Image (tube, rainbow, N blue to C red):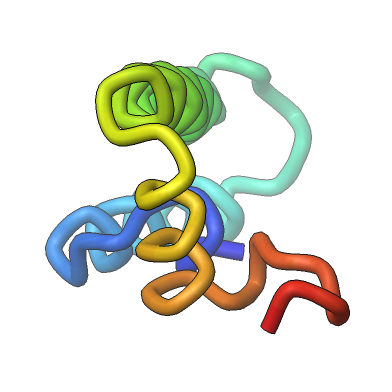
Amino acid sequence: MASVICSSSGLKLTLTRSWAWCLPTGFSSPLTYFYPVYFTVLLLHRRYRDDEACREKYGKDWDKVCCKELPVQCGADER
């Protein structure tokens, strides 16, 4: 999941660590889940915003680069 949300290894580590820190607390308090949920939403928004900006700027070339670097996002027929 982390590799689909963010491509930077530092962000993957931070995202995984944030979830790992809150999961041992159980589900008794929603307050402990604020940071990991916020960070996940922030990264998802950033990913889609950057993807749209690059697609607008580079056009079809962006789709080629995106499929080479992140094949998870591509359909089976596009590889």
